[in-house]
Length: 406
Image (cartoon, rainbow, N blue to C red; front, side, top):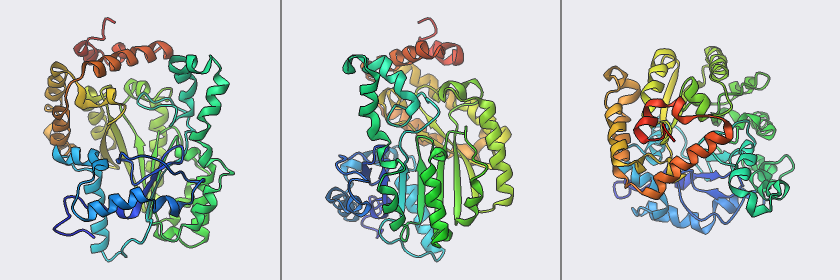
């Protein structure tokens, strides 16, 4: 447990959480970097949870040793940003101080439910979105598969097999519901998973739902009207809309979604919340090289239209590395930081506590010419494929980074 000797390293996620990737392989949490050698469906949930690599990480963090695989959290903390470790520890301590029962075993289960999705978000890839597969094949993989898309598709099956309807994982999950206190559902697009809804029904039928918190990250294009009433049975629902820009910026980042569709679904959620008081709404805005310069525009819209009913969390892209905002060239970095520092002070309650950590993160990195070249080439390549235009969508930033005339 957390104490004075290990408070700089102990993590509730190491002790009581597990994260399952889109292909079923597992990690302690989404922020960790470790070898993935076991998978759900092939090995049981408990075999994954107790694998020797996880035990070693737990022991190190309990003993005050900052394990190397947790470096993304250490990097954020060293730059003054509240890491996932710190946020989740605070929440757990609050739970205990409010009289909640200590977690036992696997209590927090993050599930990236395969790659079934209806969008091709710019910072995503085929392992997380089935809609990405043909584009990725055409641009990067065709030669490796003798221009045979069917061969490529067969190879990519591993990114949904764990979560297919007939997978043994689902029965195993139902058998582990007794200790689970929190589900984090990601995708693909989690609302498109039929078996996920079936598990929620089982949690209700078996009496576990009242003790379980649900967290979803949805791309904003789905509002399953015929399913959402089930949420009232759960202890709490945290519904995050993934909003990386507004208007045409949103449509560029989360192609081929439309901003009007996302707005409509957020209104459905806002109305739903009025009669379901166990519900929290928020934006999760993922900051990458593509959209960091236009963060003030996103915050303007949030503050003007959504701040009364929604929270906001600003997430950072760590990989792919060419979208990592710590890899900007010096001149671009200075332009981005100067713009961020002009964000209105009246946004303090929803934004300014993030600012120092984000700026420090930007300034902490080292420019790499090859990485920067990859960002520009990748952006233009997908512009051509999709008939989009980064320079027209983000003209001011494009001029700064030199893609306005390429």
